[in-house]
Every structure is written in C-alpha cells, then in structure tokens.
Image (cartoon, rainbow, N blue to C red; front, side, top):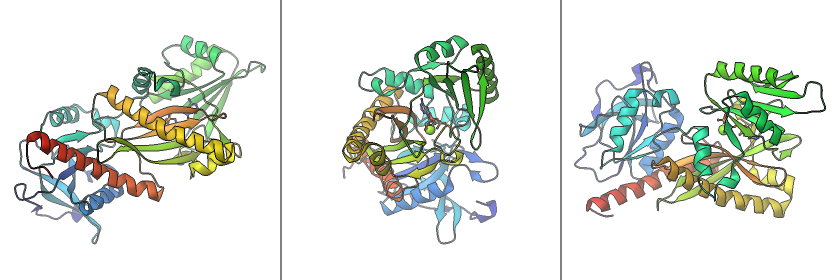
Length: 391
Ligand SMILES: Nc1ncnc2c1ncn2[C@@H]1O[C@H](COP(=O)(O)OP(=O)(O)O)[C@@H](O)[C@H]1O
Ligand SMILES: [Mg+2]
C-alpha cells in the first residue's frame, strides 16, 4: 500500500454500541513505510470472507491496539479501487494474531501488548506465538499418543550429540530451532565404506551444497561454522527416508483448524515434492505442489494409500490437541509438515502457528471460512459466559 492511497480523514466505520456483529481484528505489526506488514493478499481474502460471514473485520497493528479505547484505528481493503484505507472500528471481540516475523513478535513492546490482550476478559485472542522446533518436540514427547510420530531429536550443543546420534542413525537432519522455509537446514549421512565417510549437505537459496569430511572433527567444524552463520541454536534429528516418486522425496502439509464447535478439524492435506538438488521440499527451494492421494497411490497402491491417508487424518488431530495443551495458549489453527517413510510410517517434522497460504483452491477456501467459524464459536461462548444475549 502506498501511503497516498489511504483515505486522509479516517471515517468512523461502525459504532460499537449499535452493532451486533462479531468484530474480528487481524493483528499484525506496524511498518513505517507501508503502514503494516504481512501478506496483504491473505489479509484482503480474510476480510472479504469475514464480511460475507457477517463479521466486522479489519487489520489492526500493535501500535493502534489501544486497550483503553472503545474504537480503534484499523485498515480495510476496498476491492473495487484496490486500495487499503484507514478507518475507525469497534474494539474487537476476537483477535487473530498474524504478526508475520518472529523478530517482531519478540520485541518487548509487542510481547507486553500481547500479554495485556490475553488478560482482557472481553477479547478472545488466538495463536499467540510462534513455535520453536525444540519445544514442539518436547511437547509431543510428553504424551504416549504422540511420541511414536516424532523422529529422535536432540539439541545440537556439542559434537558428542552428533557422534552418538550418528551411531544410531546413518542419516540426520540438523535444523535451526526457529528456522523457516528450509533456511540453514543441513543433512548428514555416514557411509563408513568410503574414505570420506561423512557427507554434509547444506540447503542454499536454490539447491544445496555438499561437503565430504574424513573425520568427525572435520564434520563438526563445518557444522559449527554453518550454525554460527545462521546464529540460532540447532536440533539434530533422525533422518527419515521419505517415500519418493521418480526419485524425488515428498512430504505432506496438513492444515488443522478449529471449527464452529471449537474442535480441531482437518481442513486439508497438500503434498510438496522436493526439487532436483534440494534437501527440503519447499516450493521456494525448487519443490512443487502435487496431490497427496495421487503420490501415495503411486508409491503404495490404492489400498495401502487409503490406510496411510486415514492414519494422517486421525494423527494430525492428536498432534494438534497435544501441541495446544502443552503450549498453554489458545490456538485456532496450525499447519504441520509430515513425512511418510518408505514403509508407510508417519512422522512429524514441525508445526507452524502462522501457516502459509495453501495454494490448493479447495483448502484455501475452507481455510478462510474456518477462521470465522471458530471465531463465531469464541464469540458466542464468551457472551454466554458473560450471561449476555445468546444467539
Ligand atoms: N528428520 C527429517 N527427515 C527427513 N526429512 C526431513 C527431516 N526434517 C526435515 N525434513 C525435510 O525438510 C523439510 C523442512 O523441514 P522443517 O522441519 O519443516 O523446517 P522448515 O522450518 O525449514 O520448514 C521438511 O518438510 C522435510 O521435507
Ligand atoms: Mg517446514
């Protein structure tokens, strides 16, 4: 949005007292140049869906979220003129946190604001924070039901961690705990019969770079150099040999969201096939989108593929419940990256509390609607508890 495209005098959009519609604010961070950050196309789609579903919805920045005011300055999108405009909106009943970057969410002023929002009895906040790959692992390790789906994982604090894991698994993934889109991911393979037995692959912008090391010490030096460049703590994880088609491994992306009854429900599953020389399946790293069912059928045949899919459908709900329970914060949605190994076993790689847009149209449409269905649930249950008007 160019600053010039804003309406100069913010108009009062709706009067808090007069409206009986639920009010949802998409929370993001303010930006000096473009007013607010985040995926604007996604926000515009959300606002349009909200309006169709009887909500007052707007984009709200942390800066304009003033908890002592009845009306707040927010942003709305006009699809005819393709402009974002500033206007006053009623105080929200629901806040959907879409602050896009971890660094922004970690700012003291942002953390303080989120904490005070969470204490407002009349505002329902969901998806309060980003996940961290190490805590996710610990949370899922706490329950017998979810433990079987996590690859063995350790914090990569010293070379001993690497060497002892390599004794149990000949293939490892090393990942930054707060990583995203494959950045900084490494994979290690041991091939003891070779005179350079350790093969380290590092994910780059496109494709990956390979190093061969003669000794554990040399390997550790390389790993340390790379992890220091990324500047994040790392985890080391058992590598899963993913099912593959035409020599390309693929994994599954599931979107799980709460529904109008406040229960976790699977919105859809997509598949990502790895790029030619990539060690991950991310689309920006050369990966591409395909249909999970088609891929699974080509690997396992019809009958087994249906069994795997059924297992995915039930497992993602278990995983979501456990993650929310351990995180101790209310969640409305998360996406998950899952691997299927060559024998059809299911593995959890990570979950995201700020899911990226799914490009599959049927998943996309439902994903937008579910946000507001769950918000309807939050709105009505909060009112009932208050003893207010019930629907
Ligand atoms: N333990 C593992 N075994 C095999 N493949 C893995 C493993 N961990 C990650 N991957 C591959 O790398 C991709 C990126 O890993 P992920 O944990 O999702 O990190 P990011 O935050 O970068 O997306 C996964 O989608 C999967 O294709
Ligand atoms: Mg991922």
